[in-house]
Image (tube, rainbow, N blue to C red):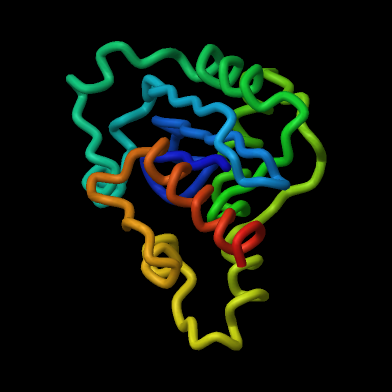
Length: 170
């Protein structure tokens, strides 16, 4: 399960500033590994103020952040042979795909993409669920919600628990 934090909503303008992922066994839901990295923004001046509020970006907290290529390579090394899964796979993958193209880092992952939002809709639409954002799904399953400010690893952990509730326990 992958989650990213960005400086806005447009992958052609805004940047990834944090990547978090949790690798789980797809059959048991067991947490096998987790990873997080802060990425040094190159164009913070084009960031959306609201995006920075949501993810709690403060320049001093990114003092040890790494360049995009280095962070992506570490992420790619961590997710080898995995299936990409995210709460909103279209959003996260659009930023990651753009960044992979920009840096030349090649992720050695399965070509399938799992969108937790769509999966949740398909499995829960007849169970009275009206909202499919991560906090609504966490609430439905009795899990803790993602606190503010959002952190990529926290989002990935909660999304992995929701996935486990949907696919393993449910």
